Length: 427
Ligand SMILES: Cc1ncc(COP(=O)(O)O)c(C=O)c1O
Image (cartoon, rainbow, N blue to C red):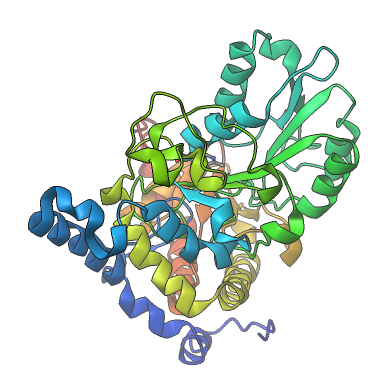
């Protein structure tokens, strides 16, 4: 896609008219007069998500408990069903994926499975700029094994308070490290880590490695089979548009199917003997064996609809448009906003940035609040970042143009200065 962007007001119309994914917008509940730039936090509802949620409700209404056997036990085996739809998005085999629980619970599950400390190798390597739930889990898991996180959790910090250096991560992969657990895309800076490079070294050094794909899945192309890491986790409510609190996912490399999960639950039991209700756990030897309890159908049906759209659009086209439309946003910021104290807080190279743009400004909170009053939905991350995610499946180039015009107006008029300092619970 041509990156010789132009500044004028007719250019976004031209881009929208030539957008091969443009027709998907009508499949989403897009509000008139609202510019939604928050798909990196909670993706928009689609008509398919609505339809499949309604369908699950109808089956429940009609069938009651018989619902579990309805349509070849689709809902009883819903994780497997959705894993089949998810597989092409992350480049894994369907039986390496379970759609289950929340990301936080899944991190507990994979860390408790793969963290097997010995006297000499007992540390988990993480960073200190990832979304904090990952760290909370790691700290609590090392405690459960009797270690002090201050000793057993090894932290790599960003080199300038902001970006991670892959070589520094690799330098810290010392013989006392048992597990490396890192995000693919950083929630604040959108930085993409070189997963191949880090995973390769971890394997050479006999270190277990797993990835948090929350900010990557549905935004960038991923091939877990080629990567050959040990495990991964991700949520489905951001770029995948599965719905608020929709079931998350985990990946277990097929090399590890014979391992026992750290946490057992009856849904991880062999499907054939699950209803024998034996007291001893018989592990189902694929990723579905890492499930815990009953499928949360109400938080999975929307995802079924949302994934249908992904299989039609394809990750390749989605990533292409995402790079192009975020590139257009960065172009307009650089052309129009730099002189008003704004800067771009993410890498500009395609290979190093995910699906959102980090607009930085000393008054980011006030500007973000003013944007909301003007019909834009951004999100603010302290201390100075406004995250903006023009999403390939439903945002338009016109919206990006209009957003920058609104920002320009806010900056020129100084209207953001009227915003007070009291911040609500969810900013
Ligand atoms: C990188 C990362 N990991 C984990 C989570 C938390 O996921 P959940 O709420 O599904 O537990 C988030 C939430 O935004 C996240 O950004």
